[in-house]
Image 1 (cartoon, rainbow, N blue to C red):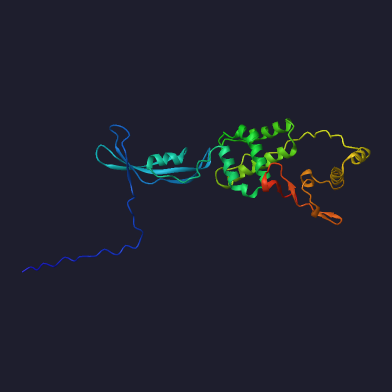
Image 2 (tube, helix red, strand yellow):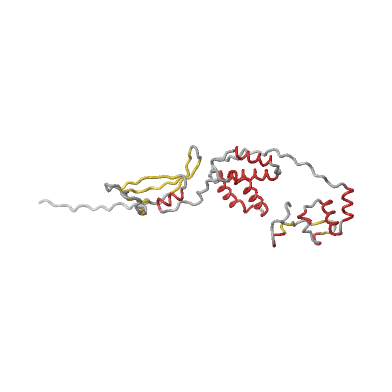
Length: 279
């Protein structure tokens, strides 16, 4: 008589590796008649090397499509321009923020936000004025990856020809270079177009006429006591007007003057008096 053995039941070994979880998907409403139902998981971004653009952020995401035959197929898609808005539209998920810097004006805005904590109030005001008047109108709307050395150098050359001082032209050159270097450091650019930007020759303005010693003595003899002291400090010590106008009696220390404050013309209230231009 045949005997039937009870079949052995094996318990699968405990899985110790990572568990694959089906991604959470959401259904996107139909956008037209007859279109297949589309579902999309979360998108992601990745930095890749492109021949023309250099290193750029590219957005990737998968979409599931259910065709007329009922089969669901997953397609991988990518998007380069308008990355955050496109992924948000297609997947309902927001991409990483901070990927919207494309023009020089946007790069300059980001650069100022990061670096302005190291600048004095006067530097902030000067840069805001200089770039708003001379730089942003010329190259602000250009894509930062399309800016080349030529328009930058022509901009400096034009400023020099128009009679701007060496200080103004030099400051614009310095911070244009720093702005593009910031873009390289943040991997927004493969290289800086301003790295070979040179300082144009600045025509020296003719020297103004100075008072002779006799003329200055005549001026002192006619000046009231307060103005007499101010003129002598100007002539002997070589102070700036902003430094002379805030001197106090306690700044006089025997045979010395303590110069540690200056008048800030563009400030008001408590900020009206601040630090001197140099130590």
